Picture 1 (spheres, rainbow, N blue to C red):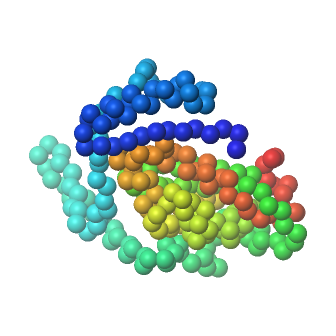
Picture 2 (picture 1 turned 180 degrees about the vertical axis):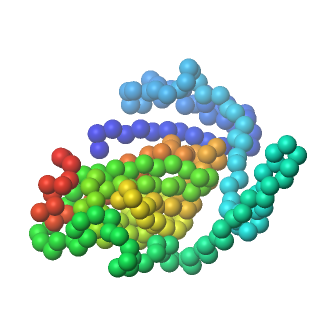
Length: 226
């Protein structure tokens, strides 16, 4: 590790306790490791913690309508899909009638090399309350079967277990040779509730890109340079 960042946060029902901590943290600038930054213009001040509450609401309980010039127009809705059971995959089965994402659906069986996922894919992540969405896009369609085989719900959940406490569900994204991983209970409450350095999970995609994957030697040429 070439760089380590320490962020100190605290919550307390009494403002006086936080003011005391803010005073005690000040010597860190002179007696800890060099490079103190991010103070935002001096000693931190205590502020109220206004927490959001995120939850899922069944689509069947909503009745959207459009109002235009006093006229009410109902909005037809397609029936919602049932939620998969715990531990079950939300992906549809791939059948012969479905078009492949690209050539080379089979993963070659040959000598393997271990590389970080970033050599095979791009990623971007964001938040929905306490849920983190991580999109993973193969750098070329030929690498998609390799990603599909190794980036499973189980392996991703295990790699992010230090952050994600709930279920991980993988969805395929047709057309752009990609996957969307929905990670529940992943942001320590999310938004203003979270005391993490990255409360919105914007860096979780970059964390996933460090995951080691096995690549057949004949496909290494399709990967980005190290």
